[in-house]
Image (tube, rainbow, N blue to C red; front, side, top):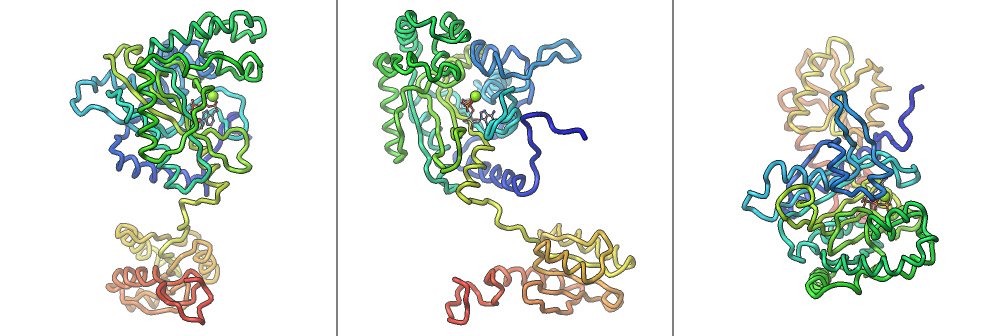
Length: 447
Ligand code: ATP
Ligand code: MG
């Protein structure tokens, strides 16, 4: 048997439905926030990620899927979404568009060669946003609010926003020197990767998974103590805007994020859901005012985030939140014999086109097992089409909830179904035939 690659999973059934529903939910939300959809290729030239994400990051040094294509080009499966969006922004000259800032959302698979574990895959999906062209701290707060609004609207509890700032280039440089001075006497106690990072990009040391528990790293200087005036002001304003939206946050000076491109605000959002385990960070993001220029575009500030869809779905599952409560169909069509199949098939198509969710028997079942199938599919109505029905131009319609059957003239079927489906929506789920307004005592449902 050929099996799926390590660290990947097949999406189908309930999880598949939940993912589609979540994507639809996100799509509607992004429309309200006035962000536009963008899709960039799943692979890009390797250079994009080396320059964009950074040569010294774990993502690029250890986690990329690199390959040489048949035209001898070095390609990489995208490990994250931002670099591709920025490449597209530059290549398509979107900076010429007067409607600044440009605000995008994306949704799709990312690839990282990681050690698979729960909440950590080699192919996983991210929903992300990028807002380009304004350095207003209001936009940093808006980006954070997109994530918190999504989580709140989904009904997730225990959401925690952890935020920090790296400051602008000048502040980062001041901090970098302070960090080098602090680490220099302890360099021997660092892992081999961190020894290299010390030379090339010391900030990355703070993100090291190996040295995470090293005492030396627990007392490192904090970026927040090395901010120049304008960086301090920027951060204070971000916090004020978050206050204005009543978004609670926790300033966590240990966050520096795994990618090279961040400046100013960096943040992570975690779900403190019981039983979730250690992979509970659902969202990571921040401001990246140098990235567009680094990738060869005009000097353009940006801010964004990415949310891990698998972790978000797990959080929803733990909190017993489902986005797909409707697993029923409206109509199940049962042709009694071969002679009725063409008519039935045409009716099926007509119902579907009119927006009535319908299906048909494809296995020539007996009437008894057809009713069982209608129950399995949670059909609201079964339409029985036999010899007599065709001869006399009517259909037998069974209400699967009340078990009542009616003869409906062919030309009346659509009107009949529309009317009945609307009535049916008012019925109690328990099938007691009382409508939602009913508060009589014989009804044992809560409606
Ligand atoms: P981590 O510290 O967990 O490795 P990260 O900092 O590498 O996360 P980001 O690059 O910020 O993650 O990606 C944003 C989000 O995408 C993460 O918060 C997480 O929810 C999700 N994510 C990242 N890597 C994976 C993965 N390998 N499998 C599933 N989800 C992932
Ligand atoms: Mg990671």
